[in-house]
Structures are given as C-alpha cells and as structure tokens.
Image 1 (cartoon, rainbow, N blue to C red):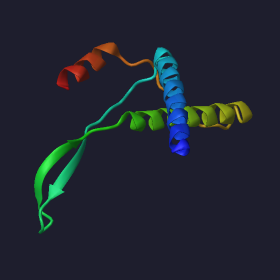
Image 2 (cartoon, rainbow, N blue to C red):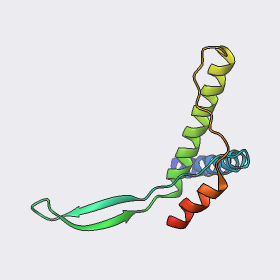
Image 3 (spheres, rainbow, N blue to C red):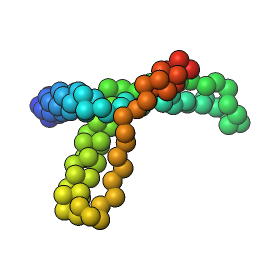
Length: 106
C-alpha cells in the first residue's frame, strides 16, 4: 500500500510538471492536435456491431506532453552539437484565417 501512495504522489508531481510544460509550450506557439479514435465492437463472427468513441485519460496527454518535451530536448541538443548538419522541422506561425476555417468544420 505504501508503494501505491508513493506512485500516486510521483504521478501527481509528473502531472503538475506536465501541465506547466504544456502551458509554456502553448505560450510559445505550440499546438494541441487532437483526433478522435474509434473503437469497433465485434460479434462472435468478428463482424462490427457498434462503433464507440475512445476516451483519453489525463494520463494519455501527460505522457504525450513528456514525449514532446523529450523530442524537443533531443532536437535542441542535436542543433547545438551539429548546427550545420542537423535536420529539424520548424513550423511557421499558423494562418489564423485558415485555422478558423478548420475549426468551423469541427
């Protein structure tokens, strides 16, 4: 039981840090791209009988945020170590008019 409390405390710390990292990333222009994931329920003959939307847990975005942070850190180190040879994707500022059009479709 002590291990569970320790793990729960550690996860709460990671969640708070991920929330902070996410805020800073968004302030710097980072986007949150979400997509609906579907789950198909099958009958005994493996034929689809129902389609349900799959719901993400807070843990999913937390893990994703830490993965983004790790990738960003590696990219920065590569650029610093190999400034003339590193290949890094750099995205410009999104066109707000186009983004509004996409949002209207959602």
